[in-house]
Structures are given as C-alpha cells and as structure tokens.
Image 1: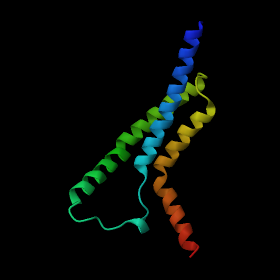
Image 2: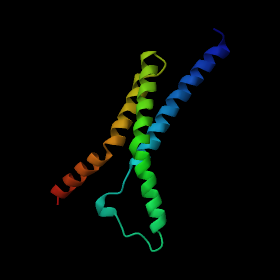
Image 3: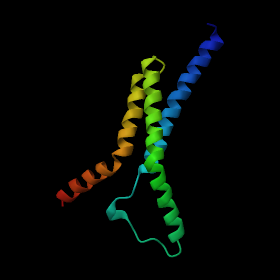
Image 4: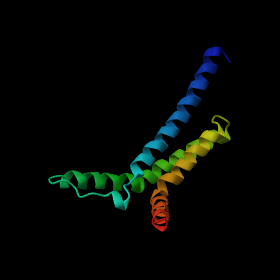
Amino acid sequence: MGLAAEMGVGLVKRLNVRFAVLATAFAAMLAASPAAAQELADPAGSGVIVAAVRWLEGTLLGTIATVVAVIAVASVGFLMLTGRINWRYGAVVILGCFILFGAASIVAGIQSTAQLGR
C-alpha cells in the first residue's frame, strides 16, 4: 500500500470519528431542556415561534433521534469491531447516547439533590 493510500485511510478514520462525535454532540444539544426553576414567561407575540420550536424539539427527540442513535451506535460498533476506530471514541459515542436519552432523568436527579440541600 502506498503512502497516499495510507494517508487516505487515516483521513477516513479521523472523519468517521469526528462525524460520530459531532452527531452525538448535536443530538445531545437538541435534547437539552431548561430546568423548571429557570423557565420564564414567553414574551408577548412569541407564541407561534415557541410552538414551532417545541414541535421541532418533540420531532427530533422522538423517532428521528432514536433512528440516528441506532445508526450511530451500529456504525461505531462496526468500526470498533473492525479495528478502524479507537475504543475510547466508540465509548464516547455510546455515552453520548445515554446522556441524550437520559437527560430528563439526569436533570430530575440534580434538581432533587439540590432541593435536599436547601
């Protein structure tokens, strides 16, 4: 295998890792929701925009997020099994999926712990 082919393989590995990490980070960003204590009243005239954003959030966290997470875990698992990706990067993607779908439980646990400290 020539030098150019080896460089191409390395580039593909780095791009696969970056894509998987960015996809997980983007999905986690969409899953973030404000804590109950931080919710403020919506400004006047923003009802349509707020409704559209909530619809988009519900859509992206429903079936679409589940499909993206399944594809990410499957592709990262395949790359890990074939030795094309570092196990640490694979664990980061899987951990990101846990955080994405467990965000509501994580926030509820933090809130209950904060209330116990008062």
